Amino acid sequence: MTGSSPIALENRGQTGARLSSPSAARNREVIAATLAQVLPQDAAVLEIASGTGEHALACLSARADLRWQPSDPDPASRASIDDWASEAAGRMASALDLDTQHSGWWRAVPRPVSAVFCANMIHIAPWQAAEGLAEGGAALLDEGGYLILYGPFLEGEATAPSNLAFDASLKSRDPRWGVRALDDVAALMARHGLVLAQRLAMPANNLTLVFRKGAP
Image (cartoon, rainbow, N blue to C red; front, side):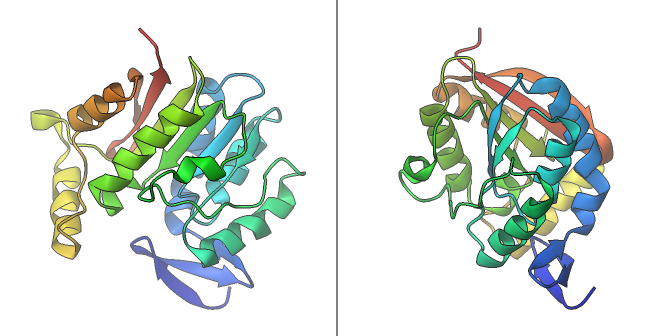
């Protein structure tokens, strides 16, 4: 390893263009196993805020039928994603420069899209990013399509103390950030026709939330 870059609240190792995320090393296998159970056969997945690209590669390794469109607004992250993609046997496309805070961001995404996946983004961005994610996800997905979130959430009195502490730390860095309330996220998605279908408990007090377009 050479070099280190403080991105997304962690120091990432770097060799050439390829970045290595300590948090991705901890959670990529459990995320990949969860998505392997949730995603439909032959899914075309758009990942928002792909980071280093390690989550994408793990998910493709877990399911040989998946196709993956990564994205990230950060140029160094996109370069890393494209480097990791060399191990994906052609099933990971070149990373797109997407920022869900930009109006109409979804127009740059090739169709079709079976699922939109986003891990650990909406709490380290303004709420506008979550609003754009919901709007764009709804525009991209056909009826029955999936929008899947992974990360920490607030659940009232049931919230883990570690998530409350993390929320306070984030807000001290930027008052526009913060661990989002699950009820607020579900209400936002519902306004765009995306209904919470599954709440899956994950390690370290994280959740995977599975929304489906038009689901009852």
